[in-house]
Length: 277
Length: 222
Image (tube, rainbow over all chains, first blue to last red; front, side, top):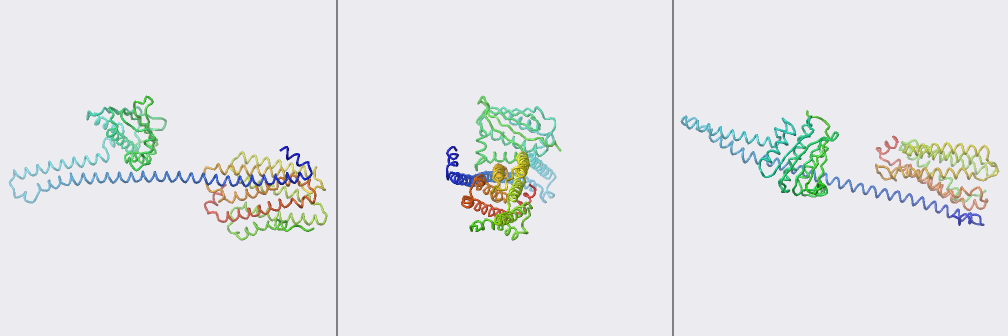
């Protein structure tokens, strides 16, 4: 700067300052414009990459949900075909036209057998229907359905399962209750299959407008990074199913290890926007 | 008085955005672009008048003063309408009012009939326009909805003004102290900057004409 001031007072100094100043300003301007353009291109490129990753994850979730739906359909089809089908065919055998030509005792025996088989079929259909929509959940709500599920698990004697609802005065919307119930079912299923834990404990609370469920278990478990990695990979269909269900219910799930490093903790957070209709 | 060829190219380059504007007449939906065309036309007429008055040894300082004021008002109006932050808008409004007062003060009390250039006004104008342009560019790179900055006509208008002001900044500071010979030597900087500015304004009109309808409606809402 001093050099420039001295130069401007010397003969021919003005031209030097003018030349250097103008050149400097032009270089600065062009540099700035180029910086902005390249910076923006970089930001856009990064955002597009993020969008692509998100789209891929969405695709994975969608595929998982379609596969799960297909598996469910196949299971129902198999139940109907393998169980209900033969039962009804057997009942039909007992009730042939020849029955009228037979003696009364045989007729009664056949009718009794057919009735037994039809009762079994009714029970089977009921079981299929219950697996689609648990009646306890529909009629008595999430608390009863989860307590029921945990009692059944505990009743097996293999694992100690308990649940406690602290703040559940008002039922959630039907679809939301089903989403939460299915997520809990999936988590319990995973714990039973993979964790080798001795207990599962579930607690429910409200935090503002959020419905919170916390599950603890003492076996092998997942932390959030494991969950996210499995969600991005092609394996872990059940976890993807949890993610897609919670996405529908605008919920969140967090997997963490207890600070004491003894338990694994899973927190489900779902906004309570509407009550049960 | 014989002017170099580049001086004529610079003066007539003002017609470049005007011609482009008339060719794409139907596609110009943003009325702010008409202000650019008006500014270009006015700058051409002003140059003609000044050259005429210089040749006939008439005073031209008043024309320089009015031109600087109108140029500043046009540029600051653009930047004001392009800026989004309320603080930067208030800042440019306040500075514009102060600048007008400052110019009027210089015109009434300090105008020298023998001065060959209004260095003080143009230098202050350049500083204000450069700072406001930088604020605009800063706002653009911080925008959450990222679209290619060069796909907006505003960017090219601002770059046109910015390049012109940055290029002529030092020349205008020294202009009043330069001899006639030096002016002839260095005024080429102004000619080149002016040609670039007009070319960028013409490019801005082309970019605007090619903007998608959705983009145009967003611009109109701004």
